Image (cartoon, rainbow, N blue to C red; front, top):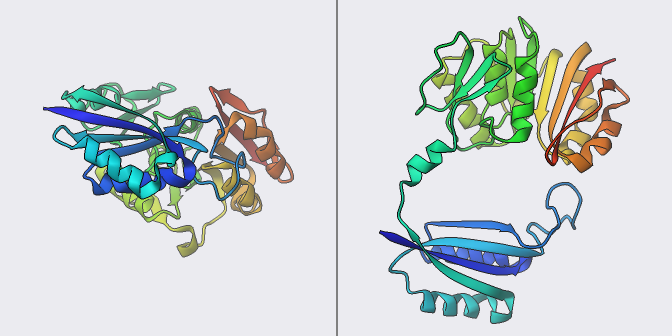
Length: 293
């Protein structure tokens, strides 16, 4: 079986509508990516611009889809002038699951922590191991921001320490902290899917007693030894004072999810309460660490 791949270019005002229309025409998947250079994270564009000024829409369709009719319908709905170039290609069927799994293997951090998908063999070495598959929420250890936090955790002495994972996503950082000896760990997120994913991953790894998972509005968080937050710049800036209240004197603050160009701006928000180290850069991302005064 083969698949049809339809690639369109449009402006941000029409991209979302085109995506919805393609799904109505039974597209198997629809993805959006930038054609223009501006970033949608942080404050690089107008706050009400949810997509790139020029956006690429890629739809995967069944091979019997009538593309002539589909293109006419799309142009009638959004306007021919809203759709730039389009391209049609044929994709031969492959072992998509097998290829996906090949790209998500075992990851080792500082020779102390292993993140292992369920389809991989667990290393026989005496190493703290998390069983975790890609799922509903962000965080598998593949992204530079998550990997930087896991590397820091694996190099730290967490024995009996209290930890907050603020914006826990899949729960990977909270699970890692427990596996590395933390005494009590609090994983919070405002996204219900993240809380669901964290709970499922905690059960799979048989971690329950040391871990509390909750919406931040539903729990009175204690003052802790370590606070980790792998989120975006705007929430990190807004939470600076709150994080200062949650970290013990001489406690650790770990911030990630920041573009390299955003590091200094974030440092300024925290320097009133924390002694901040120099940023660590990895590709276009930055990692920050500080200790509470």
